[in-house]
Image (cartoon, rainbow, N blue to C red; front, side):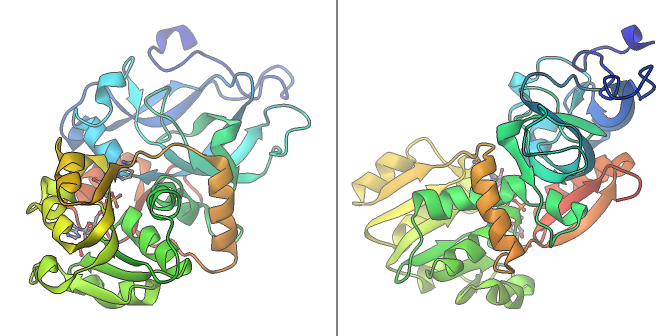
Length: 346
Ligand SMILES: NC(=O)c1ccc[n+]([C@@H]2O[C@H](COP(=O)([O-])OP(=O)(O)OC[C@H]3O[C@@H](n4cnc5c(N)ncnc54)[C@H](OP(=O)(O)O)[C@@H]3O)[C@@H](O)[C@H]2O)c1
């Protein structure tokens, strides 16, 4: 039977080692695409279980976070050029339970609840019942969070940490303007910047303003009614999650920076002359690209467990409704995160 299933990793029964006679499943349900295109190309299929190798951990996935990169890749943009074969399983964020540890003495044991981020499409993604995950890409999930909530954290929180903490070095006395503060990355960016003592100015529509203040924003600017450059000046850092895909947000942001200030841009909205444009005005600029990183995710886990950082889940979809989650994200007005419940009971 397994030979008839093509395109998804190699065949193995992850529990064959521990189950006498190899009675465990050899296939799993996954939301796959057979080609790139509109959300309708996403459909549930029975595919082969992933093969765990070397120091990978096999995880029974409970839930998968939905990120813009999944949507762009499904549409034929994003990282779709690197998809090696179809059917391809989308998704990078996951939460779930360890069903095979990397080796006997490994700190992650069978039964541990974990979360993390895959490197899809270097390998298959997380919209699936199982994932084989390199040990450096996952850690124990925060005890404070459900598996559904945990699935919304890794990629967005790691991106926010990278931009706000690693690159911008958020600290007391610093003024930071954060565009799209209400989105997946933005709501973590607001919280990290405020946690490290910065004065946070966020942009969002008015319906998210009071919520963003609760998360730590000192000021919220309604981008639908106010030109932010008319009311913001001399910020030290702009965290730009919009860029020039909307109303020249990136270029206009340069006007808000103090001399020598820094703009950190998520690549979707960057433009080819970003660094030169900034330098011509005596400013600094860089893009930022996230990587899976269990050690930083472990620090974020502590901040979640201490109650300092929160994740907001806007909506949860069933695996069969993965296409609907993409339609929802494409509307561009998610508050926090969207999550797909992969397991039937989470
Ligand atoms: N480079 C990387 O490694 C990396 C990693 C993660 C994400 N990204 C990119 O970063 C961007 C943001 O990702 P995300 O996950 O945070 O997206 P998201 O969750 O889909 O963002 C949705 C949010 O954007 C806000 N928004 C929409 N238009 C806006 C505007 N003109 N000004 C201010 N806010 C606006 C909406 O707020 P309202 O509903 O209030 O309008 C909504 O809350 C995406 O382009 C993504 O691809 C890059």
